[in-house]
Length: 179
Image (cartoon, rainbow, N blue to C red):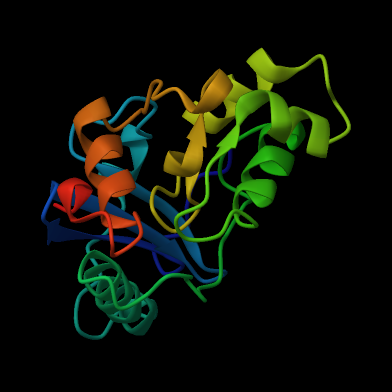
């Protein structure tokens, strides 16, 4: 793992309906977005400088904050932000994370179906482990992956958050699931 250049990496905090999140950006793009207390949080980002008003990544932080807030208002269904995949993960994990970006708003896919889509039909558990380590929550929609037959299963940010996100993305006619 490379040590971030202070001029090229930064963090900021944002408040969401699901609690505080830490956003990490580099000169390449967003490299992390974690809920407070999320499993697989890369604590070394806490040593990165805060994106001050004159920091080179300040604009990306502001744009990401706006997108996340629009997402929670139901006004944004697909994030168009650059992602920096260089900081974390194995090549297999990165392949899984890239595949997650193809899951549309409100859709669900099982770990097994995702493994088959990646031409690794016997690797559902490995795919599940990679999904759980996704460092870019919400933007890379790991919350859209479910267990066999659509079962609600683990989420590194907490099952309560996954339930909320599923409800947020549920069809408008199903008001009983809306947050």
